[in-house]
Length: 238
Image (cartoon, rainbow, N blue to C red; front, side, top):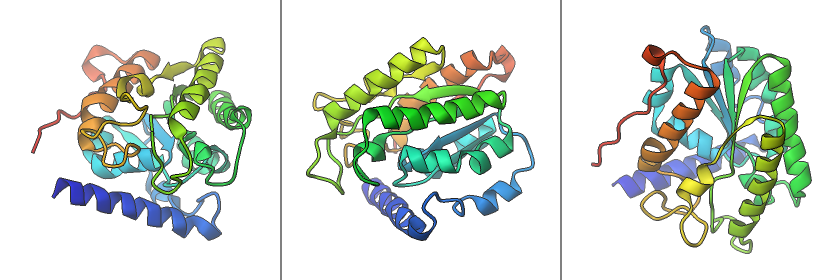
């Protein structure tokens, strides 16, 4: 049953991505939700289906910590950059957690160099910093196979892209959150216990690995007092 639910969720995200065809940047995806935000979020999570799936599978984590998810399935770094103002800056969060690059590697909008992917990410970081928003820059999570682009071999490509992102983050003193090293298996994908397709995390992966990591990062970056620290949701196997 869990596998069926996860598969249906992934299909839902894929269909959502297709629905954005005539709204290339996805401005309409969160227009209603953005209008309903009345409390300043502590963090906005900007990303693709991996971020969208996180908010979908574990809404409790976002609600408990005053986070909001702004992930859109299938999106590249260029699309995220286009909607960064309404989906992130407008909310004036304390911090933005940026995870971008998976769909650039998948060539969802055509081939793109690593340097141009990085440039899109840098632009998002600079926009956040110009608005006094702290930044956590995530590695591209591991993927050994794209179900929609089986002709590509993304594992090694993602490793090389992450080296570039980390080098820039280190040089510019931006917090780099290395999910990849904690998640990758021997073929540079997500292991079966954490994913049905080597690409999209399941609830166990979010709760046991990614949530503890991002909470630790946010507590450091925002210097959160001990009594108010962000916490992951404990995972209970079903």
